[in-house]
Image (tube, rainbow, N blue to C red; front, side, top):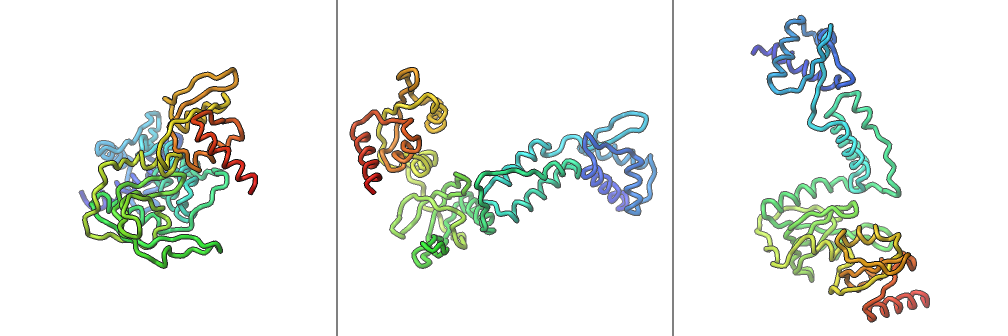
Length: 324
């Protein structure tokens, strides 16, 4: 195919991709006007043959047959409702900086027509959301994924915040040697779980990715995952109220909290009716400060019934808080 023909095909496809959708079809005359603006001279028969060739190559170019045929791009890689959801997710994600959010939304907008792209300029309000200022997190995430997939260790330093809100390197810039196992996105932050060597660790722990300073790959084989390692179990221990030895507790809850109990413990949680206004649930938790804080958050709508030692410990913590 002569280079002129290839260029014409590319320009036609570009025009259709950017300027058409089901609500904005174009005619062959429109395409010829566009090509003329690109200094490409053609005729109706040639443009019609080009469109047919693009269709035969697998591009979904739909033709509305009428007195004057109209053409538009049909199926796209991502449809407009899918793009809208992705744009909302980008805007809502705290770990994505404002600058990167705009870049990602611009990239998503390029996947549809200019008309539909205007609908992606969405004003999503997320209560209290503060965007990250760390532009390097995207490279850190990519590096950690690569290390996990290739079976390598990583090294890095780690940030913490002082009482004066200054960001400083933890333990005076100590270098961590780490075998990454899994990346987890929780509460709008990325965490990496793995085995940390030395540094008073020598165990599986987590690090927040946006607090890692200059991570780099070490061409060493990682420490194998412990036999009892399970990412779902570790997430429950770290992020929920299961960060200690399990125990069975009975809780009396107001009926309005059933959705809360199901959200926290799953749809198969064991419950029974207590009275017309309450139900009792039996759950496995850790009698930790996290658990007691969770109960306290509901201002009396959840009461600990048993075991007595858990109930007594909760009352002692409340009395201690009152005495200050």
